[in-house]
Length: 134
Image 1 (cartoon, rainbow, N blue to C red):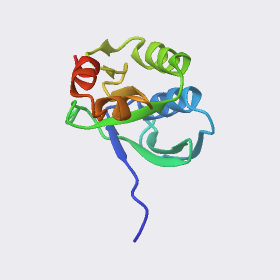
Image 2: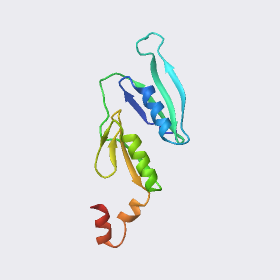
Image 3: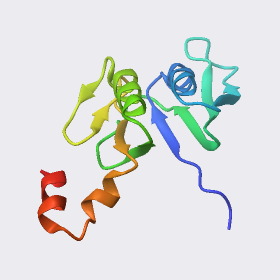
Image 4: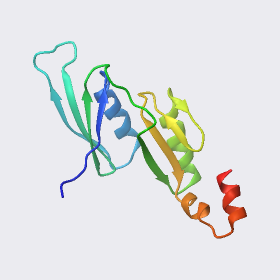
């Protein structure tokens, strides 16, 4: 099977977004920028980048589509410092939501989740698990 690559549709901010995301996550880089020689007002067509080894493609496709919470990216965090760092950086200029969800300044949704959360929610002590969920 081939590799699955998220393809993100932006209005005109694909390069700005890719530069932002690669600055946030370790082991990340922009790998390719494709330009449109016929458009001097918006020369960038696509930006290919990696976030900690996961490949993405960002397209400057115009204003026809925008992101919704129906798709989000889950960021597992080992420490509270990681949770706080990703939360503060990704939510700046965006919108904070409940339960670790946020929208960044480009409208893309993220879930900032402590690694321990799934284990706590599955605790056999249902009262304890319910308190975690509340």
